Image (cartoon, rainbow, N blue to C red; front, top):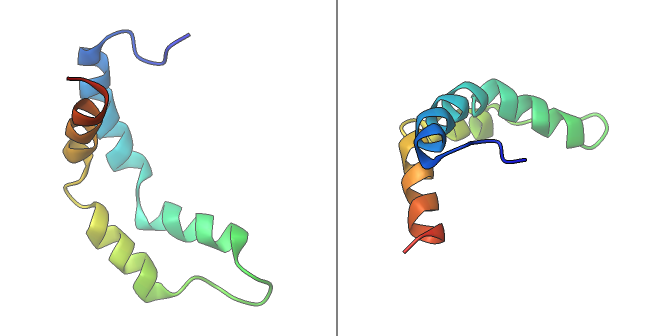
Length: 70
């Protein structure tokens, strides 16, 4: 079963979910899970990730639309 029933649902919910889930803290936690023993994620990488996702939520939807539909 599809997660979204329509394009309107997708367009409305994906940016909100992206903003909630694509956080520097989530990125740090993910890196920490795969880090070699005795290491931690670099703070500059985590802050750069945060800067890179600011304002990107709406671009995710428009990019998906361009990639999947004509």
